Image (cartoon, rainbow, N blue to C red; front, side, top):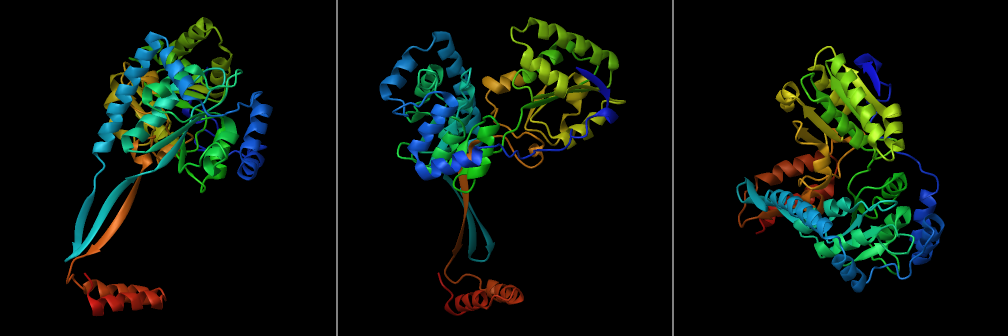
Length: 425
C-alpha cells in the first residue's frame, strides 16, 4: 500500500460522487421502454449470453431452491434475516402518525404511507450477492410494502442463482425475474409484458446498473447512486495492525476501484499494517482484485496527531468508517459524515455487510454528507395533512392574503379571503 502524509493525499480524495456517462446505457433504457420484453431478451442474450423464457421463476423453482439450500447456509440466512428485521422493525417503531395544532383550530399532521410496489436489484455475476436481497427486501417488508419484485442476472442455465431463489423463498417473496443489468432497471421502471412497473428501485449494482438508475429516475424512485465501495479506518498505534489489515483487505476485494484507507498518527503502525496486508494478500487464492485496489486506491496516511483524522473523515464522508483503538473510539462523537460507523476492533465492517442487522446499502463517494443508508424510511412516503376545526382561528387569512399579494398571486389571495368569509369546518 501507499504510505503517505496528509498533504500527499491525491487531488480527487475529496472529490465526491461523479456521475459516469456509461456508453450504451441510455440506448438500452430507451429500447426497453419502447419494445418491452423483446428488448430485454435481446440485451440479455447479448450481454449475459442467455435469454430466459419465461423470465419469471416458477413457484416450483422457488420451492425446490428453498428445499435444497445447504442447511448451514439456511441457518446463516435465517440468522442474518432475523437481525436485519429486528433493526428494521426498530426503525419502523420510530415512524408515527401525528397532528399538531399550529394555530387555534388549525391542525397540521403527518401520515406515513408505504410505497406500494418496490423493485429490488440483486447482483449475480460470478457469485450470488444474496446479502443484498436481505438488505433490500427486509426493510421494505417491515415498512409494509405490499409488492416486491426481484431482478437478478441469469446464470448460464437461464435461471436466477439457486441461492438467491432459496433466500427469496425463505423471505416469502415469489416474484423473481432472471434479468440483470441496465435492462432489468429499465424493465422495472417502465414495465414490460412480463414485468409490471414498480414505484421505486433499490439495490446495489455495477456502473451499468447505477447509470441506468440515474437514467430512469422520475419514472421510478431510486435509493441512491452507488459508487465503488470504500472504508476509512482511524486507528492509533495501540490498535491491532492485523485486524486493521484484515478490514482493508476485505474492502479491497470488492472491486479494483474500491477504496481502503487508514488514518493513523504512527508511522511504525502504518508500516506494520502494510506488512500485514502483504501477508494477507499472499493468503488469498485470487488476490488480483484486492492487490489492484490497494495499489491504486489504498492509502496508509500518517498524521501529526490522530485528532486530524476528524476533519479528513468528515470531508471524505466515507461509506464505512471504522474507529479502532481506545483513542479513536473516544473521538466517536466528533465524526459526523459517514454511511455506517463501526466502533472498536470487534465491530468489523464485514458484520455490517452480512448478519449484524444494520444495512449494507450505504451512500458512497462523499454522498454521506447529505444522505443516509437504506432503511425503513426509504419505503415510506411522509404525507402532510391540513385540517381546520369548526370556527377555526381566521387570523391566518390576513397573513396568507398579504403573502400571496406580495408574490403577485391574486387568485391565491382570493381563495384565502373566501375562507375568511365562509369560515369552513
